[in-house]
Image: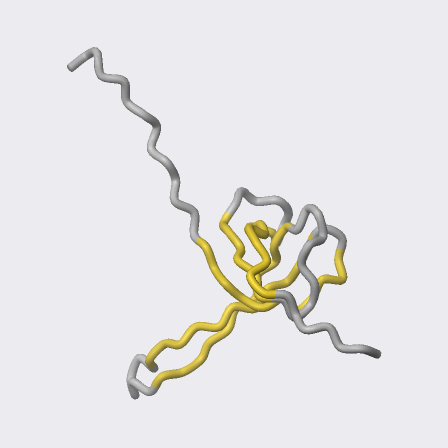
Length: 95
């Protein structure tokens, strides 16, 4: 039993999928995540939203894109998430 090598436990980071609402900062995006939850008393299904600031190192995400973000170490006062992938790009409209 002493010969067994134990592997360090892999951490499973939370992932969320949402829509980019702002990509105006450098290397930072704001992602809005919607979730449907029942009201605690009336049990009616409600839509709640949360906004997360995420680190976008290469500037891949643009406003309106659907993205997947993953939990990471604190990168600034308000950034605790990192961009994992762009799931769907926003449709480009001609101006």
